[in-house]
Image 1 (tube, helix red, strand yellow):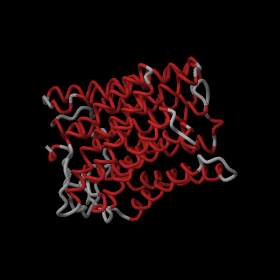
Image 2 (cartoon, one colour):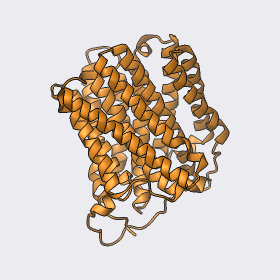
Image 3 (cartoon, one colour):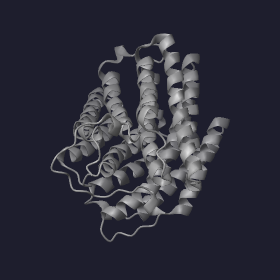
Length: 401
């Protein structure tokens, strides 16, 4: 089963680089959506930290920042990965050509509508973004059913769940209810955590064994089933308002994640940047879920009492670190490039990790918090600028073979 996860072959780079082709660009979901998601990660943080006056109504300030990071950036990369990986898992490409271009157009309209559109633009953006998630979910469902890929039947529902959580969040924005807004953001965060756990638990062991010669590690399927089942239970408890039960489920999910990571022999990956970056992201995700459980159960103290702590540990330390590793590794593989990092790619890894450390340090109140926050933003912007500079020329061209 591991060989079905993601088929990547190392290929030598050709002597002559092919020309950009629109057909190639819209051939698989990862091509436009990796560029869109990483580009928006750069732009949205630059706006949030250095030009917040550009953010219009009705989704202003923190509500806009939280939404655009989770659904505008992280969920977009997840959609790009799943639309691509499902083609490998099932043998059928769920979205390509004009259909893929359509969801990209919907995505762009949503981003502009939330930022500049006012009340009318906001509502148009809501419709476009809901259509984006719905089309992705339907396309994924179509191919997994066509291929009778039973082990992947849950993936379309997870994508649909992300869209539903988004719609609920947007409804809370219109109501102006901050408490409800944060509850629904946490719902979306946990939905995304389920997707991240599902993807990472499949690909990290596979990638590690493909990269590190002689490494044998378990796939841990049974613990993965418990992990995902409890994560889904946490979502149900969250919707029902049972925060203590949600906290217990999340604590166990986080503990399982750390157990899995230890079982994957992390020290063996220390000389393989394409792998250790994924290990670090998975560790932060597991730890973040445990911190979230402490927050929900009222056991937090000091800086842990701030909801921003577990949110940034999960979203920035977990999702974003996993993302910079995944958008590098999977892009190289699907583009037929050697699975090796050059200096710019390594630097982008270091910058994302620096952004995580600086942003978490900025949570402690003090005179340096603003400077730490700005330094984190600069590291973040530089990291994704490097990624785009290095990978956009590849993503707009056909495979090298």
